[in-house]
Image (cartoon, rainbow, N blue to C red; front, side, top):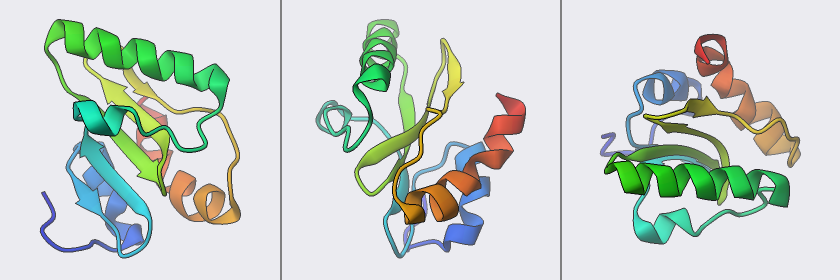
Length: 110
């Protein structure tokens, strides 16, 4: 886990390795706790159902779910049973250009 904020430019390595991180701004990666699973920010309703099903499946299997957030919105998540899920959505300019663009490394692998 990064003990100090990381540069946004360095986040692809953290994401690819599913390591916990926090940028100086509003991007983060973490393994979910019961509390953080309820934080869905601006995730559209159509993707919230996938989010909830993936979280429940992870809990039932006793495995962790890793999430990448922009502000409080999940913009990608990984589960052992399904791999990566990246909602095909556009959000704010910062999220779309600075945060979602950092997901290219996992899009190639997904």
